[in-house]
Structures are given as C-alpha cells and as structure tokens.
Length: 238
Image (cartoon, rainbow, N blue to C red; front, side, top):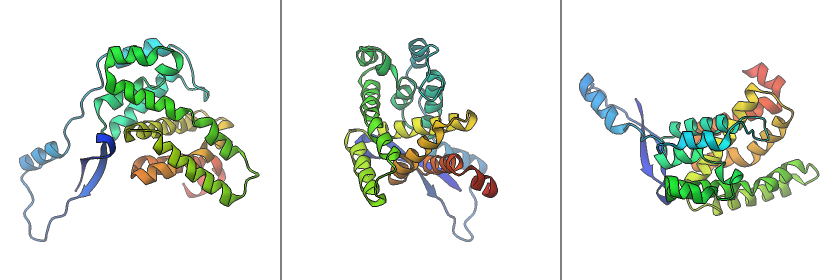
C-alpha cells in the first residue's frame, strides 16, 4: 500500500513524498472501516484555492497568449491542477492561477496583496523574479559553440542561482509546474520551438525536479523532452 504523506520542507512549504507501508507476515489486514479512516488521516482533503482567484485570473488575462501560443488562462489552469496534484496549499494554487498578473499589470502585485493577501503575492512575486533568468537560460542552451564541460558548469551555476533567488521552495515548484504545462501544450500543438524548450528543460528544469525529489514532474519533463528531441527513437521504444 502506498500512501502519500506530507512533511514540512523548506520555508514551511509542504512537499509530498510517498511512504511504503509494509505488513509483517501473519499480520491481520485492517477492517474496511479502519482502512478508510487511516486513508483519510494520511490523505486529508486539500484546501481550495483562494476564493475568486479563477475569476480574477480570467478577467486579468482575457484572450492573451504566451509565447508558446497557449492561452494564459489555460496555462494557469494547467499549472493549478499540477500544483493540486502535488498537494500544495491554497496560496500555491491561487498563485498558479495568478502567476502572470504581475507581468501584465504594473500594479499587479499591489492589487493581489489587497485582494488575496501577502502569501499569494509573495509566491507570484517569486515567480516573476525567476522569470528574469529565462533569457540567460535560453542563451546557455542556444550557444552550441561552448565546450560541453563549460556548459555543464555554467548550467549548474544557473541552477544554484535559480534556488538562491527564492525564499520559498514553493516558487520553484510553481515554475516546474509551469514548464510541465508548457511541454504538455507542445505535445498537443507541435511547434519548432519545442525542441529548444525541451533541451532547456533537460539542462535546467529536470535536474531541479530531481534535486527536489519531485519525481512525478521529473519523469514527465524528461519523457516529453526526449519525445520532442528524438521523435523517431521515442516511437520505437514507446
């Protein structure tokens, strides 16, 4: 029996992990009612996102799209579902829905603070700071003239910068959720840009997911990236 449990992690974030529960030979199985109660204790229902977050995001984004071509609202909903799957808190779910508000509104963080409080605003602001590294990470991956060892060292520095720029590990998890949703979009809507995005993912985001122990995202990031970069080989082994 595998049951998800939660432990307090960096900056009070809740990071889902899995614990294997084993029974010794001869141990009687719990009665159905006991099993249900135990499962409820180990898997408390997640709190909902902040009331009004979806409506606010819908009004803020409208029909605008990301550089990938995906609608921002659709991307935000995908992020929120991934964050819910990781069983993060209500502020994290709301921040997933509102992740781009600060990008499209100069007073976005101020408005979010008034409407949803400091917790959500803190996370959205952290996402905005991390996004400032994107031109640098794109440049590392695009520069094919670099010595492989030099590139590896530079990417490792970038990963450390990524983690050093945030005070709350949930911000990194939100960024990983965003990248996962981007790859899902490219899986449904093929585009030439997806190969570059996949390479960047394998160099930066997948190792971060591995370092943080977020295995479900790590596997999906690697699987989709390999699919985009090596489509023929992927078809043979899939």
